[in-house]
Image (cartoon, helix red, strand yellow):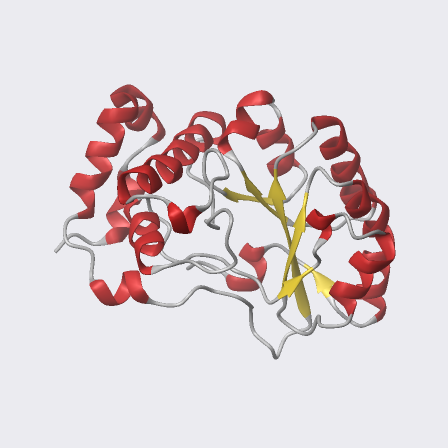
Amino acid sequence: MTNPHNLANLTRRKFLGLGAAGAVGSLLGLLGDIPAALAATPDISHGPRSIPNVALTFHGAGDPVMAQKLLAILKSEKTPVTVFAVGSWLKTDKTIAAQILGDGHDLGNHTMNHLQSKTLTAAKLDSEISGCAKELISLIGNHGKFFRPSGTQYSTPLIRKSALKYGYKKCISYDVDSHDYQDVGKAAVIKNVMSTVKNGSIVSLHFGHQDTIDALPTLITQLRAKGLTPVTLSTMLGTI
């Protein structure tokens, strides 16, 4: 049986040198027979409840100008977050991945084109996950720290099995939904988070929405006033 940890041995040079088809084949070869129990384990929706940390996680897509405004707020507030980037979004700005990491944030995989992951065939799902992984490798030298499926809060066994093929041992969900993607207004974004957030919460937020930009400074202030420290998923979860 092939240990999924061996996926880490597929280096950036090997991945890019093989090309898309070759890289996928090589990854599948490393996969071997994935233990069914590992692929079937639940998503991670929160961190330790005993530690007063909170992870702000952003779906990375949308207007690059708005992205820069949001990143500027995070830098000004000295607030590290986790960005799950859409591969096609990374292609539009080849510098933003390095900028996100340089600012002290985590960067993860949110599929290539942000399709409805639960509706995809196995082959298309593989393509979506591997496509974003390849884009991340080309830009930062690795496939990103974490994976979140697009278009769904929770994964399925098929999604988890496909994610595991490309080195993502767990899918990341969340227990607090800001609903900012629905453009509900600044006050509602803050209320949606603050009314349910607790120790270890993972919060879902989005780039590309003005309400999020408007709400963020106040949201960060209120989280800290509640005794919660915003951290990256790496800090909250460690190595998974």
